[in-house]
Length: 295
Ligand code: CP
Image 1 (tube, rainbow, N blue to C red):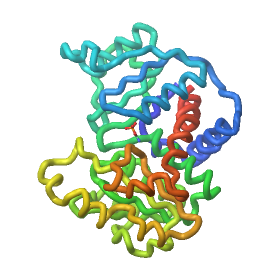
Image 2 (cartoon, rainbow, N blue to C red):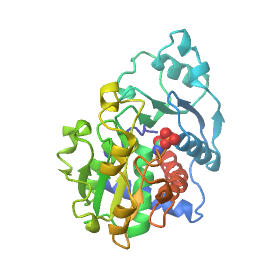
Image 3 (cartoon, rainbow, N blue to C red):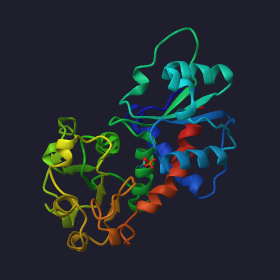
Image 4 (cartoon, rainbow, N blue to C red):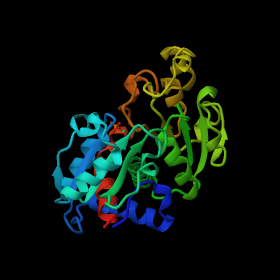
């Protein structure tokens, strides 16, 4: 069994196999592989990722051990590594971990006792591999390919693990990436993947318009005071006017939770071009495929 920490550690062939497998599971393919014992440790809040990992694990027939990190002995000073070694010693095979620390998995102490197999459910502003996979599944389901797609990622780029995961894999799969958002949240890490453009630049040629959540829990007071919600929405949000400019086959994506009327006008969150709830549905199948693949 192998850890699943960063989608970009997978080969293109492996990623395409995961996309195809997710869609096969959605179409009713039978789950495969051994049933493992799994614990989901969410040190940061989650609606979508936590619930859909649970759903995926149940559909795979895995045994879930209920651990609430807020009630664990970490409140008494136990380290993340010791918590993970402890649950492994007790019989947990796989730990699905969300943590505010970027690359938490690179900071685990060694030692004699093994860790469970680790699945990254989102690390700080680092990576969000299961979100990337469900985004790939949603795009591939709609377009049937990635080659040449014009994908624009918009918003709080610097703090977004979704953007950090996605920009690289989208480029590797042949998409053309552009990036938009407040300059204060530009990040040089993206320069190798695409150019920064104004949101309105050639909007009528974009295939996928992906908005990012403003990460209030990670932004500084100074950043918070840079603009009001209304100013942000006008400059970087999906308005009716922008929606009307999109080509017929374009899609709108957002990892959720959406700050309604900030990233996306509330009445466009469920507009015909929006794939936001389809992304959530696809998340279950993507996570089933991911968990099958670590065996
Ligand atoms: N997209 C996403 O990670 O949402 P949650 O924080 O609700 O899991």
